[in-house]
Length: 76
Image (cartoon, rainbow, N blue to C red; front, side, top):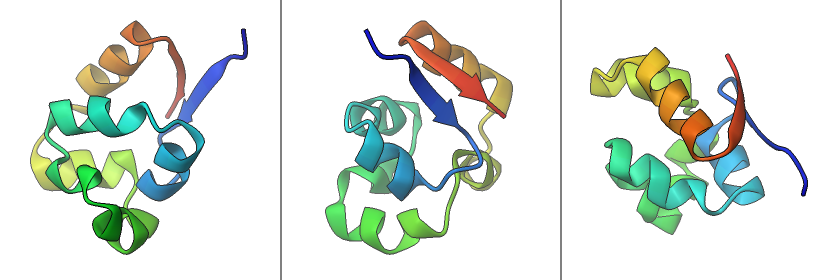
């Protein structure tokens, strides 16, 4: 099994292109626009998980833990 690496400095576009399953996970965390392909193509190319957490008022540590619980190795 290949290791799934979520580098939180990559853009949402990069992460969701590499790991499409992140779309549902991030949506569940509050990243509402991530389900919209046009949003991923535009804003998603500019926003990282880190900046998204800041905009949405989410705790980056909690988001990282959730991603780890879903089988990702997280790099902050």
